[in-house]
Each structure stands twice: as structure tokens, then as C-alpha cells.
Length: 109
Image (cartoon, rainbow, N blue to C red):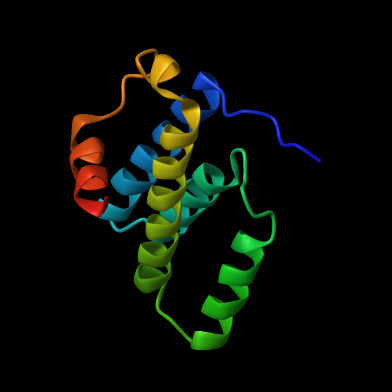
């Protein structure tokens, strides 16, 4: 089955959730940050079991909330990067991607 293409709205929503999560993380509201990062990662998922598997690994690892938040943050950032790449060059212009995020993503490639 062919999956539906990524939309501009999905990228915007994922980016907003990631930015909200980052704000929560910076203010040490780790539970709220985790929820925002999970929301970002669940928008147009490429692997529907990924979040579930990550959650299981984190629960069995005995990590602190801050460490869990960092793990979900990474997941959300990688997911948003992939959404942006899947969006296509023509539609990317319609999404004002945060400049700081784009600089980080460029370093990854």
C-alpha cells in the first residue's frame, strides 16, 4: 500500500510540537516536553511502531525524565527532518522552517 504524501500542514504541526517541546524541556517541564515530542513524532509516522518501541526501551532502562525527554527530542527532530525532506522542494517554500532547526539539519547531512 502506498502511503499518502506529507503535507505542508503536517510539517507545520510537527515543527510547532517540536518547538513547544524544546521550550518545555528548557524550562525543565520534562513530562510536558515528552508529550510534545511524541506528538511531533506521531504526525505522518514512517514507522508506526517506532514510538512504542522507544517507550519500551526507555521504561526498561531506568532513565530519568530529563534523559527520556532528550531521547524523545532526538526522535522528534529526526522525524521532522524526514518530513521536510519528504515534502518536496516545491512545497518547502510554503513552510517557514525555523532557521536554527534548518542549520542543525544541514549539519546532519
